[in-house]
Length: 323
Image 1 (cartoon, rainbow, N blue to C red):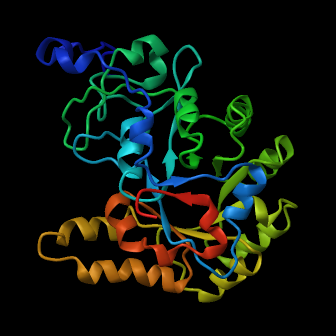
Image 2 (cartoon, one colour; image 1 turned 90 degrees about the vertical axis):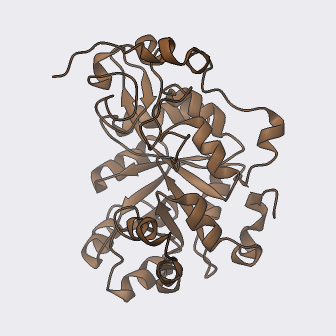
Image 3 (cartoon, rainbow, N blue to C red; image 1 turned 180 degrees about the horizontal axis):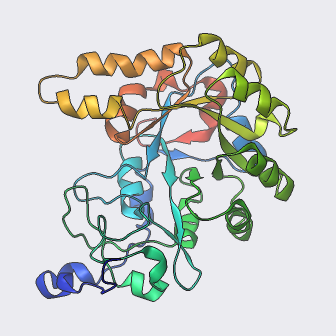
């Protein structure tokens, strides 16, 4: 294991960047955001209900990091929402003293000024660190707690909480503590956890993995309502076109991930022209995707979003500077 020594080089080299916290911006900044705002748990279910009119927006993987904006960072979430409508996929982890922070890796090395495992440090020690952006450059931003992110997201967007080592019960408790059922979902990796989540709180929506007909029929036997989920059909779009139709027939939207394939292709060809890759994203929508989870939410969101892309039946959930 690497040394668990907290690096203070940021304070010595760039003192002006070491002090500010990753706090929620002013209301004037918030007014420039592309806001998705279900007002209650029923509204969240209605928002994700498939009605034959695809939503055509993005899920920002780890919030959509880029140069100057680290992953799993409130300022990054804000930056994404200034450019496009998006929900935020984030990663909860435990600190040494039992706090839940938002950080993807089990270790600090890649994305912060620290070294060692996240769980080896207390919350106060983690707050002394600063986040690195996609280029490895130190920023002024701290690792946020899940409480801070839940507080920030209200009336702005929808959070999608991955699991990491934080079980369903603990994530549901956090949602209940913040009364965040209207704007927070859980990713669950087993139907056992889906049933457990539904038993704990019937108002909590979930992202459930349903990449084939076998999983479709197995979920159908769980007793969890299809209205409580969005179906993640995979990073490779299902070749079985009937699967998309089967899920839609249940009134459930489909999400597909592009972070492992199309996003990388998009970045590789962006200099020479990305028209062909752009068409691949649109093809996903034509096949049946309703939401695309991407590492490039600002680029892909603009590709997919226009006024005409928002179904009239869902327009009440959206508000923004260009809508």
